[in-house]
Image (cartoon, rainbow, N blue to C red):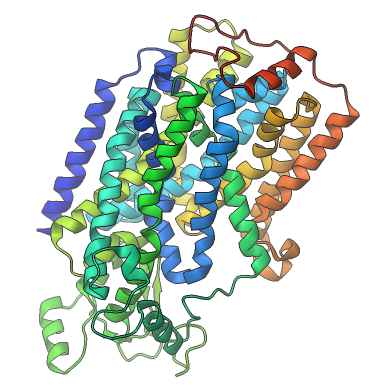
Length: 594
């Protein structure tokens, strides 16, 4: 029954997504890049929420909160605060400028082909790093319900996303993301309600999280703290992370959000700067439904995992599970749960019988009884595995699988649009082949999206070496914060910022942040050597200030921007003073290099 329900939800939702992509097939470059600029703000808000709530939000955030406790809140706070920053500080002004992409903004604002090309490189670095995390999420979801290796799960996801991203462009992606939001939010909240009722007796997960454990007369979080302490883990409501690192990770996620190309481009799909503000408000409402539920899901997941796995007797693959489980129960023991055996086939759960007693010991580094830990779970599986761990109905389990896939694929599609537009529009039409027709550009956009799907799949397989989904995504946010945020922010709010300063800032931010991440993930993995105690996930915030300072110094030391550029900066800060590109008969002429 589990397989039947899962297949039903997955096949039904995928058929819906592909059907929408065919219905909303892009017929022009405007449709392919920005959905014709005519998406309703509420619809765009829902699509933005789906684009924003990726596999990191749906699959990984609750899982990392489950295992990091309070320390995992940096992701929740950073991503939420970042979207507010983007909605209030940048989105309306970028929409008023009216270009297709972030490199388009950089190229015209800084009157430079070189700046445009560097912005393309930054956007590709950020997007490919981000999409690696999404494809890992796709692999986790597919491997979990199909029982295939992780790599095969990614390959299947590549085929699906190819259809609706390459065929429909931004128009198809937008309306597909509306459907995906409905699927993912329903899939996330329904099992959370079930688990809250089981563990706390309260149907509202947010209230159950801070309430009492059912029938025990003690706060749910107090019970969890006690259990974790007894097993040698730190208290759930405390964090071992250094305060400076928590601050920097939170800030890198915030400012990185405001520099993410795939989120910014969503605000170009509405008619005006005012509509961009309204759609941002709706997106925050839609995002809050999941983000306020995630801490409860994480806490419930940790309790259920410990209850079902710790002190369970392992059953080998060559044994008859039912017969051996009955034998274990007859002797007063607890057999390894069936959900564990299901996920073990994916390679995302592992048991090493270190003492040879056949009993699974789940312990922390400071276990009072001195027992070594024998169970190694991948944090990214827990939202998907939660309904199975809690023995929820088969239809709930199938729904969650469909929701996880919707979350990963919706963001992957948005990122593919950034990659394809960066190659076809910013690199080809605006830089190399300036006489390219709309028809040729559309062909190149589809071809580059197809190539990006293949590259994304390979990166997804590689990302398993980098860490869990949210950690990989955090690297993308750091790159965006250091390379793109300074030039976007200064380009809007400081008219003295020139092309030399922008180029210097982007190169500095990208090179330092990427170099730091690479060095401390692959060369020197000792945290004691981190600069100021800041991890690779948070270093983008530090180098953001370095990049901004370099940009300002270089700008002041070189010639000021032309007067028409300075007038343009004044104009875009007053919505309605100019006609945005694509919103009417008057289009701003591209600015040539000076």
